[in-house]
Image (cartoon, rainbow, N blue to C red; front, side, top):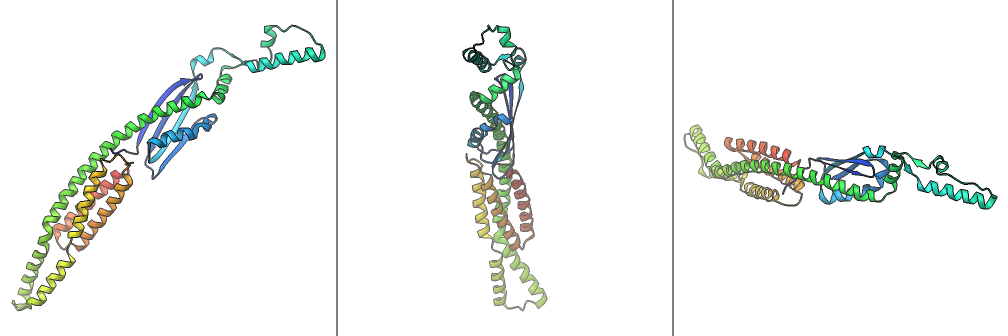
Length: 296
């Protein structure tokens, strides 16, 4: 199955007082490059998230955007900072033991001390930077966004594969015409040359030299090897389009090889119809190359 390198995926979840949005988009690239744009406090999770993506994608530049905003519930009530309260109470005991200072602390006294009550966003930020469960939440979001992106790449890849298969069929038609035309090139050249020699020499030319000329022309214009290799490359292209592995680079290589064979045929061609077929094949190969550049 062929995959495109172009795709988009999105997923959102709520965790730790935040609404978190995951967005992923991918475009063409020679290798697999994953670029993150996420809040600074989550950069420590990048390596793990990158491995999840690279297990599924082989090529393309993948931009990952993770944004967060406080949920509605997080604006309601302040949060008790238990560590600070424990520190104040411990300090009160120390004053009593060391300096003999006595007194009763009311709840209102404790709540009025600095740092005892945290604003909701401060408490959430602490959770965001300290709670290891965020790692699991982020992996969940990335996985779901990645699934959507892969699905889109698969749909686009299927469309590209069908387009390439159609153009391969056109190439096969041109190839078959070349195969049928190739044996007649020498025959037509021989007949035309005999006619011209007869006209300019009143029919008195040496058959031996004439035969040597035809033999040299036949050798120079022979395209049987090029046609055989071209047929093999076309078959391999069809097989690649059904392969489960990434095919973009292999397909690009085969297109280069087919271009080389077609150019050689064009160099050897001494026939107008054959030259026109060469031009048609080069045009189709260029269209295939453009499409294959989008395949993983």
